[in-house]
Length: 291
Image 1 (tube, rainbow, N blue to C red):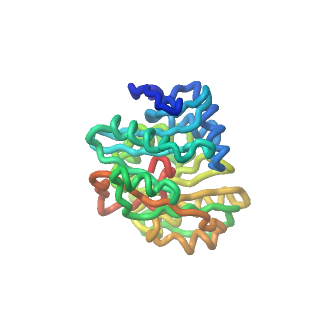
Image 2 (cartoon, rainbow, N blue to C red):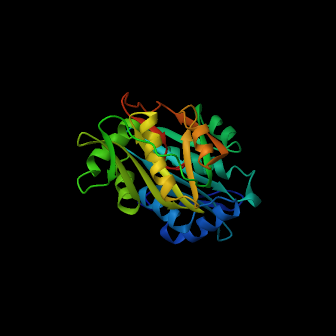
Image 3 (cartoon, rainbow, N blue to C red):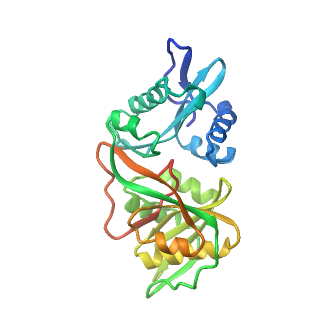
C-alpha cells in the first residue's frame, strides 16, 4: 500500500513532505542505519508493504520517515518515525506525525515511543500506558519445557491461518489480519495445539542482526515459555531478539537463556486502548513498529 497518502507540502526551510514510494526504501534503510537501528532493507520492505508512509526530503535527500498501518476503521498503528540527526530540531518529526494522524482520521492510534520521541507524542495527545522491554543476545539451550495438559507443539498447518489471525486479534486487541497472514507466509511458525485446536503460536523470522521471535500468543505463561524455548533451542548459539511487555513474567527467564534486556520503549496511545480477550495473552509483540 505504499504511496496512498495524498499529502505533499514544502516548508519555508525547504523540507518537503510527500508519500513514501517504493523507490525511497533504499534511502529510508540508509537513514535507519545512520541512527543505529538494526533493520535490514528486507525488514523495511515488509512493513512498508503493509501500510502507508511519509518521507521528508531536503535537497533531494530523504531526511525523515514515518509509517502508519490502518488495521480497520477504528484502530491504527504508527512506527518507523526517524529524523536524520543533522536536521533534528526543525519540527520535521511533528510534521510527519501530524500527516499520519490526519490520514488516520478518527481512528485510535497506538505507537511505541523511544525516550527521545516521548515528548513529541505527548504534545500530540498520546498517553503512556505500559512498557516494552527489548531482550536479545546469543541464545542458549533452554531447559525442556512441557506445555500444559492436553497441549502439544506442532508445525503450522495449511488450515491454521484463520485461527491464528483470530488468536492474535484476541491477544493484541488489534484486527491486523493482513500483517499476520503476511508474516505466516514469510516466517517460521510453531503452533500450540490443545486437543486438536490451535490455542497459541510463536513466530520466528529473520530480522536485523539475526532472528526475532514474535508474536508469541499463548493461554498461559508456562505455554508461552514452551513456545519461546522451542525457538531458542533451535537458534542456540545465534543472535536472537524478542520484545515483551513489562509485567508478563518472562524477564528473569529470558535472561537465563541468554536474552538480556538491552532497551525499553513506552506503549502510548491516542484514543481508546485496544481491548484484549481474557483467555489469550500476547507474551511477545510482533515488532516495535507493528505492535
